[in-house]
Image (tube, rainbow, N blue to C red; front, top):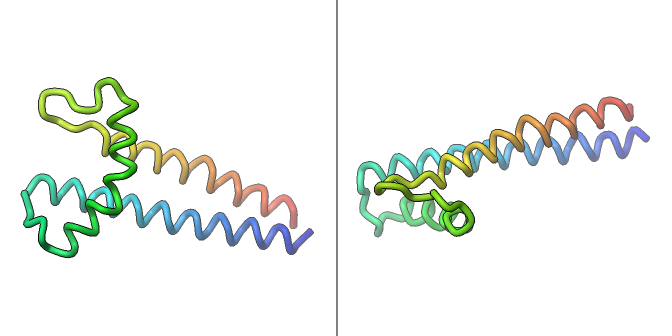
Length: 100
C-alpha cells in the first residue's frame, strides 16, 4: 500500500504547486488589469491566455460576474483555488498518510 500512498502524496504535491502557481497568475492578471499594461507584452499575453478561459466560463455562469464595471470573476476563481488547496489537496495528503 505504500506505493499507492506515495503516488497520492506526489499527486497532492503537484496539484498544490499547480494551484499555487495559478493563484499567483490570477494576482498578476488582476494587477495588469489595474495598470492597463500593453497587451503586446509577452508576459501580459501569457497572463491573459492562462486566465481568460477560466474567467470567461465563470462570467458566463455567474449572474453578477460584472457589476458596475467591476469584474467579480477573478475573486470567484481565487476562492475556488483556495478551496481546492485547503480541501482537495489536504484530503489527498491525509489519505496518503493513512495508507502508510
